Image 1 (tube, rainbow, N blue to C red):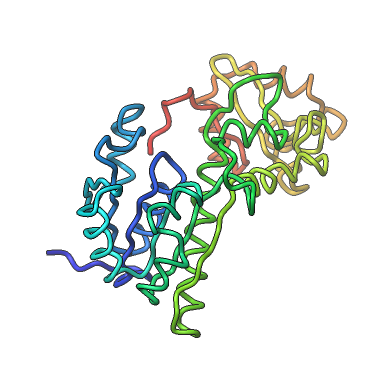
Image 2: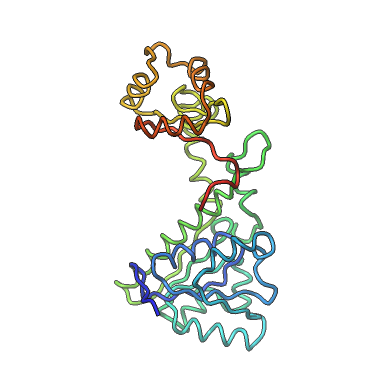
Length: 288
């Protein structure tokens, strides 16, 4: 059997979080060496039905148990798992956790070593308000022109924050000897993601929102390319490689140039000239 390695080797995680932020966070902790037991309801995780391959990817190497936490037997088994756990990750509303006796005051009272990270929609009293990635993006101003987002930005950024808060709780426990509760509100994560928009950085026409010709997406002969020559030395290198004068760094002139080759050819050219440019991959075509 291969020994578990990584900075979190020896850390034991129990998760009852379903859907995406919790499982993605727990997968991140597992990648750092933690051992994970994920407890699923009898009906399973909705993600299993929407994207089974993704569910399998996020739960690779974990122990999976199906428990009815509303039953005495299910609660007793979860309590056994928590007795040997370092981290407990949840994604239920506070009222639901309290009804099951899984709020931190109750869990921490029985298992003082457990650090609990609760994923909620909004902080404080707003934690009872229902929502998902789409509503948090909508409320924070991340949706444009009424279009659906390209991915679950808030869920996945939230997962990284959960992993960070989990590590912070473990570090704190090393000093205090007791576990603590950390809360990750997805609405806070969405607001953090929206700060570049609020400051005009990525708003339409902003410096990296289409306002700079050297930081934009262009149509190629086949496909599209994303040019990100933001720093002056990259602009200088771009001009030299394309044999352009400084006054030719316009969106119209660059569009004319990039239309002369395919996106794949431009990608090879950029690699050869050390210029930050990438062929735009079709949705779903990028390899993991």
